[in-house]
Image 1 (cartoon, one colour):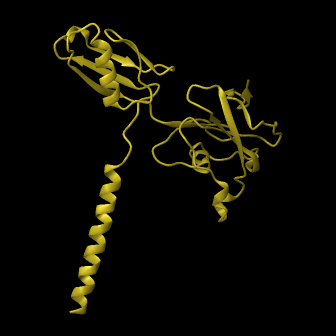
Image 2 (cartoon, helix red, strand yellow):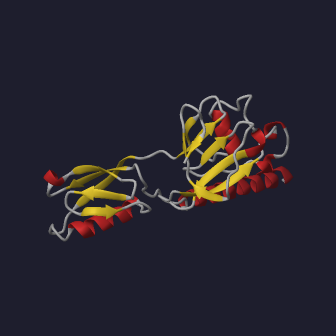
Image 3 (cartoon, one colour):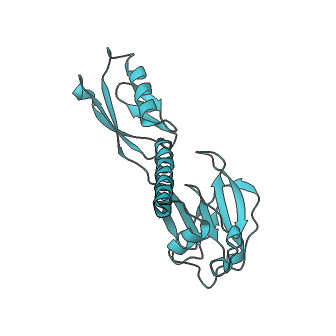
Amino acid sequence: MKRILVALALSLAIAGSLHAADDKLHTRARYRLHTGDTLLLQYRLSPELNQTAMVGPDGYVDLNVAGSVKVSGLTLQEAHDLIVQKASEHLNQPELNLELKDFQHPYVMVAGQVYAPGKIEMREDMTALQAIMLAGGFRDSAKETRIVVFRRISQGSDMAEVRQLNLHRVHKTMQLEQDMALEPGDILYVPNNMLAQFSRIMRVPNFSTSTGFPIY
């Protein structure tokens, strides 16, 4: 009898955890459009107006009927409703099918003293150290104690907040709190031993592909 009660309790606990996980899946945020996404517009009654359009750097798409529409930050359904509203100024009750044909995969950039600098695609939660390892790891000339992370203050802004990290031997110790969770668009700069000084807020730099140094 005792074994039956234990088995029943375990079954209820597993069912509860599965239910909680299911709730978490159902409350996951919907995808929101941003620069680089490609939209497919199909008008059921006016197929000659069908088109493919890409979201530009300013967050707008240029459409045949609706004109220039800002869709960045909107869900696909919100973008659909807004485009239909704009198109209704020229068409009588347009019936639009809006699809996300392709999207700009979120990425971070790693530059400076790593073996394979460049864009690193983000497929899941990523930390600064993980991004550097995916970029080939530190060169011998890298200053691991002063990694610089640039994060744009807002989308489209050329100003960034700057943070410095000490990742020296962090993968060999328990000091994981020194690592940092990254966000799409972050730029990591791994300096050499001659480090320039960085302000807390500054313009987002470009990085020379030949030298790995920031260019302002």
